Structures are given as C-alpha cells and as structure tokens.
Length: 451
Image (cartoon, rainbow, N blue to C red; front, side, top):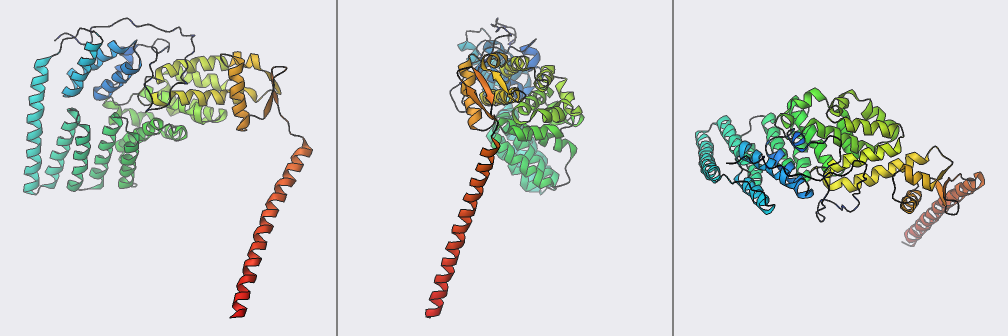
C-alpha cells in the first residue's frame, strides 16, 4: 500500500493581518460553514494533529477536512494513515478513502488489510462473547466482568460506538465494587465524547461522581474533570468551563488516560480556558483565575498564543487583542468541540472588549473606536453600541451629529424622582393586596355569621 500521508497538496494561506468573521455560523445543526486555513502563527497541520492519537485524531482530522477545503486532502490523508495503523475500524477507513477519491487524490486502498481485519474482527468478537458466556455459566463474577470489559473495548476499536456503550452498561451486573460501576460510566462517557454527544457525556460523568461519592480514584477524577470540561465547552457553557479550568492540576491530568490515549491534548485546555475566560470573566478575574494561575500556565506553555491573547486583553491593547483573537478563532473554528460555537464566542468577546474600552472615557470618538476595535465601519460599531446600551451594559448615548459616544450621567433629581416613583408603585401594590385580603376576610366572616 502506498503511504496515505504522502500526498501533501499545497494549501492557500490567509494573510495573518486579515480579520476573519464568523457571524454566519448558527450552531451545531446549521448549514456547514467552510473556513480558510488557520492564520495562527507557525501553524503546522501535521504537528498539530500529532498531539492526538487513534479515533480522536481521525475524527479531528475529518472535522477539519469537512470545514476547510484548503486542508481537506492533507487532513484525509493523515486520517487514513491513522485508521490503517492505529485502529481496526474498517468502516471509517473506507469512508476516508472514498472522500479522498472524491477529491481526486490518488491513494491506493489496502483491500487485503480490509478483508483480513474484517475477518479478525468477526472472529475476535465471537471469541469474546464466548468468554463472557463461559464466565457467567461458571458463576465467576470477576472473570465475567473482565470478559465483558474486553468485549466492550473491542467494539470501541472496531467503531461500533452505540453497541460499545450498551456493552459497557451491561458490565453493571458483574460489578463487585463502586470503582467498577464508576469505570463503566466513565468509559461510556469517553465513547460519547469521541462522537461529541455532550448531553450523554454530562449524564455519564455525573453518574460516575455520584457512584464514587468521596472515594474518587485520582486518575478517574482526572478523566472526569477533562470530560466535564469538554462537555461544558461543547454545550457553550463558558462560566462552567472556566470553573473547571480553575481547579485543574497539570501533573495529574497529563498522566490520566484521556491524555495518554491521545483523546485530548494540553493545547486543548489552553484554548478552551482562554476563550471561555474571555467570554465569561471580567478583566480582573481573567488575571486572577487565568493569567496568574500557575497550573493553567503550564497548559498555556503548550499554546503561547493563548497567553499572549489574555495579556493583551488585560493590558487593554484592544487592536492587538482582537487580531490575536481572530487568529485563535481561525483554529477554534476547526476544532470539533469549539467549532459550532465560534460565532457566539467572537460576538461575546467582542462585546466584552467594547464595554471595557468605553469604561475609562467620558466621551469617545466613534471613528477612533471603530478603528481601534477593528470594526468594518462606524455603522457596525453603532449597531452594537445600541444593543449594549439597551441591555444596560453601557451607560451612554450616541451623539450622531458629533460622532461621539457620550457617557450618560444621571441627574440626582431624576434619580430621586425615579426612586420615589418606584417606592410609590411598590406601596400601591402592597396596599391593593392588603385591601383585597381585608375584603376576603370580611366576606368569610359574613358567611360565618349567617350560619
């Protein structure tokens, strides 16, 4: 078989200064959006994907190929080589090969490997089933548990995800302690994680935590923490994601199975934490919880651009911050966990940046602000400012004649009058409620008297 990774078609690169817009992205179930290749400085596709292994590497490469035509052929070649060398998943191997053919990439299919692997998969599946039945008939609960676990892992390797989840759930009847019960929930969560089914990941990890109670094995705890972080990011729950990042311990995580198996890489934690932090935290919290967080800093070492972005935001270097944000979002758009939310992320972080920019000034030139915050036009900036003012995130008014945003300072008399009106409305409601109650009691007493 020819080396599947040998074809390396040239891909067009965007100018690093070019701003990337993601506003057309509606969510995970929307029409597929095609992006250009990442503009992140010194980005190397092969080096990036080599941080992962097995089915995680394959599915990540396929997601990138589906959303970036510039990288499609190279991603599929890397995925094909990984499927051939690291898995027994014939279905995904043939699917990738078909997609390469559609792209007119000449890669020979290893039909002999496909047929041989198919026969071996079928034979091993039957053997493992017999082992389970044999142990059950003999009444050997521990042997039945081990055989059922081996059977479930085999189903994962051959790509039968739904059947593998059911097989792991079937191990429950052979479990002899809470650790075994928690393990089946964690393994089921991992299968759903590889398919980006975040609701199921949440459900299984919560079940594992409830099962273990206080007796949580350190490696299990680390796997659960990573799974819950990914589920939070996958659901777009940025505050929950940051809360998870704050408690992560680098040494414990990188030695857990999620990392050693290549399902997750340290660069993921850096990217998830940085972007979720910018979306969910205030300026001072970003410094305390992320920039000065020693443990998170170890993850940032794997993706220094995330650290630079956080420092730019905290130092109020807005133009540079938004430029770095665009570069990171160009990679996040091709991440299977972050990708469906990249439009929401960009909008939220941009809003936070605009609010932060306006805080020190009594008035700001709309033209200067649009230039500093990398807006296409002052009209785009005005549209966003109107929304922020309506949501009371900014206390200001737009002076269209002079082209300035003027901070609004409430008149003390107006404030006092508004307070009095609010108190009047509150007292009126209380009075009406009291009168209604008195009327109710009078009617009740009248009925009692007539009896």
